[in-house]
Image (cartoon, rainbow, N blue to C red; front, side, top):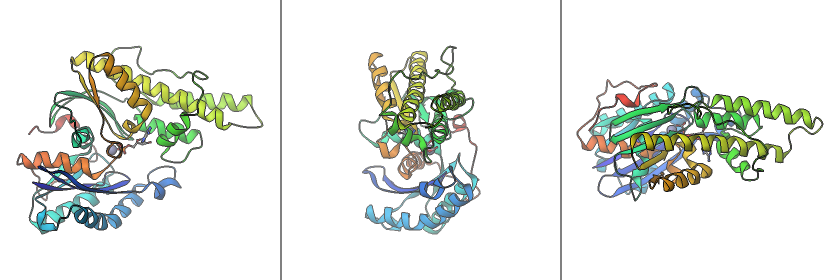
Length: 344
Ligand code: KG4
Ligand code: ZN
C-alpha cells in the first residue's frame, strides 16, 4: 500500500509518499518561518493561506520524487488535529477532495501520533511497548505506548509546552522566532554554572511538567543583569550564559521525568519526538540517562523531529492498512486527546 501524507497543522506544509513495503519514497517540506518571523509568532490566517499556496506544488514534487503518478496512490493520510483550525481545514479539504477525485480512502491522523511514531521511519525502529516523551511547540507529554492507538498519557504540561518555553525565553533574549534552535545554538557559547535555573516540579512525585516559571525566572535574571551593567544592557556573553542555564534546566527536568517514567512503567525503551527532540543537549543527556538504566533511547532523524509529512504518511498507512478510514463528514479536531484514539 502506498500512502500520500499531508501535514498542515501549524506553520509547516509537509507532503510525503510512504510505501508499506519499500518505506519512505519521498518527502517535501515548506516552512513558513520567514512569513511569521516579523510577527514574533504564527499568524493563523497567514498560515492557512500559505498552506493553500504550497500544497499543490508540494504534492507534485513529492509524487515526482517518488516516481509516482496519482493512480499509484492507494490512500491519503492528513493531519486532522490538534492544531490551528484554519490550517487543519486546508489540509483536510485538500486531502478529502483528492480522496474523492482519485477514489481512494483517506484517514485523519492525530498529529502527536505522527510525532511519536516518527522514529519508526528509520532502522532500528523501536519495538512496542515504550515510553514516549513528546516535546513540541504546542505539547509536552509523557506517554506509555503499547501499540498503535494504545496510548496512556502519564503526564503533561500544566502550562507552557517545552518548545513554547524555549521560544518565549528566546524572545526575551531578543532572538528571532522560532527561538528554540537559535537559543540552543547560543547556549553552546555559555559559561556553565554562571546562572542556575530551577528544575520545575522535580521535587514532588508525578510526571507532569510546568515550564512557565522558567520563562519568568529568565525575565528576572535578564532584569538583574541589565541593572548591573546599566549602560551596556545584555552582552552576547550574558545572553549565552542565560541561554545555557535555561536549556540545562529544561533538559535536566525532562531527563528526571523520563527516568521516573521508565522506572514507574518498568519499560526500557524511550522515544523522544517533537521539535524539542532536535535539541542536541537533550539528546545526549537522555542517551546517558537511559544507558545508566540499561535501556535504549530512540529519536526520529533530525528533519522528522519537527513537523513533516512523512510521519503523517507513516501513521496513516498503519491505520489504512488495518482497514480504518474516515468519510467526507469527518471534522477536523483542533483539540484532540491522544488517549481517545482507537487501536488497530
Ligand atoms: O514539533 P514542532 O515542529 O511543532 C509543533 O508541533 O509544535 O516543534 C516546534 C518547536 C518550536 O517551539 C521550536 O522552537 C522547538 O520545537 N525546537 C527546538 C529545537 N528545534 C526546534 N527547541 C530546542 N532546541 C532545538 N534544537
Ligand atoms: Zn508538531
